[in-house]
Image (tube, rainbow, N blue to C red):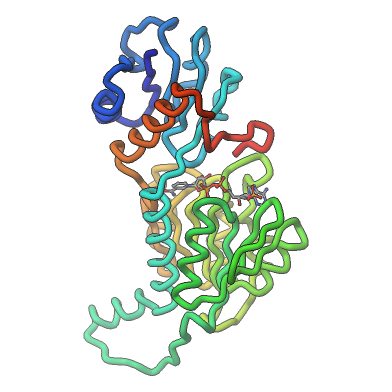
Length: 314
Ligand SMILES: NC(=O)c1ccc[n+]([C@@H]2O[C@H](COP(=O)([O-])OP(=O)(O)OC[C@H]3O[C@@H](n4cnc5c(N)ncnc54)[C@H](OP(=O)(O)O)[C@@H]3O)[C@@H](O)[C@H]2O)c1
């Protein structure tokens, strides 16, 4: 009945504490400390080292400690066991806060007014578009994309979204497939990227995608808001589009290399907002509670939910 905490780059101690408190009848083992491999029934993973989940003869399920599971699939020796990903309102609400904040930051030209304040300039010469003049396009209409799309809609933005399979969502123009992507991009002023990283989506935010965004528009050019995974984007293409004016601004939470290297021009580009991959970081307590609820339900004989489709990679 033991649960293995298999994380790299994170301190395992808060996870041990949170899981012990919630699942007192399950011993907790930590990867890197001695443990009995045969005792492990569940593993919780954040970037576990490749091969670390092999040779666990009684492993029944793997829980990703993030909503994205590309880090789990990075293990070429991943055992063929069900993979459960985090779906938690705590995380979803945080992501939507971040997306909405950045949509408004660009809509209301926060950087300009911060500069004006620093320079004690009183200038009110621009016409301000309102949210209802602006078309947002959300790539990825999953748990996070749907919530962000609905909240952008509530603020008055016109909202469209794109997913792998066709969808019908109230008040959101839904697109799918390659043609659907083109149709969405050509009308989009603010592009929100909330896709998972898979072989089909790697590098999708590149020069040719950015070139398809609506030019001009009420914001003077398209805006990119990206919080899926860094490897969805080609940062050299984003910088080139910002430099040429094909992109008016960007808010980036995820990067091809994390931490973002100090020499990256994204840090200092005047049209870019950088955040350290924390658009939606849930507390170990909230995520551990999700894992504990799932394990308790599973042990009552209920099926695991939010299972990852290995074929699709998300
Ligand atoms: N920055 C952060 O702090 C942070 C935090 C949490 C998560 N994330 C990232 O956010 C991602 C999305 O999370 P989620 O919970 O919303 O995932 P999700 O529920 O699995 O939704 C993924 C969405 O992307 C669509 N999609 C996948 N592959 C596609 C493709 N090739 N073409 C078109 N659409 C495609 C899916 O289409 P269908 O609906 O048709 O399947 C679905 O709508 C995660 O994978 C993770 O990388 C980032």
